[in-house]
Image (cartoon, rainbow, N blue to C red):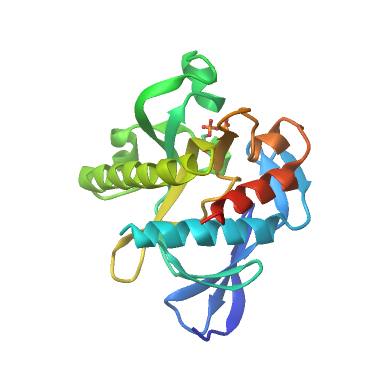
Length: 239
Ligand code: UDP
């Protein structure tokens, strides 16, 4: 699809969004910047943007193939993705298979423990509040969505994405520990998986060594961030 890049619409921590000549589409430029702990920790890894663009493109294509609607249209260059324009729902949907990160801190569940079922959590997307954990009633009171049914729908898509990705990564010797999804509404009012699905927003552990192959390498100063992202892409492309 031919589009012209127009003015910048928004700049986030991991991407810049540009308008195009068609109001239904935006261009997402993946950045090399890394941030953690609500942007208190900052870094940069050359080539990370291109790796994330490729990884996210492959995952969105996989989800589309499995009947899960996403905002993905086409990858136009190394770090440039054409997406449907969506109005982002201000909820981060986190799906967890294995306890780590904030879950272990909040509830004292042992690090590395497999949860009895995939846990879906909602966080309110608001940097000034530090993205707090919310329940369904909070989401309604905050006006994040219009009805409880939409929240149920987000939970269902979260679980569907988890099933597809767990199976996909298991065959590639990677454990999908947890991940974050964002959703948006397009012009037709359809709910689409939006933003990105990358090692910035997911946790991947090697099934045998339990080595971390995601942004935790940056969060915890483990080094080898780019190598880890390259490894995830290599395994995705195994076919
Ligand atoms: N996550 C994310 N963006 C956020 C918060 C979390 O992409 O603003 C992802 C994170 O990479 C992990 C999952 O969501 O895969 C769960 O993160 P957690 O709540 O454990 O937060 P953290 O330990 O990163 O503070």
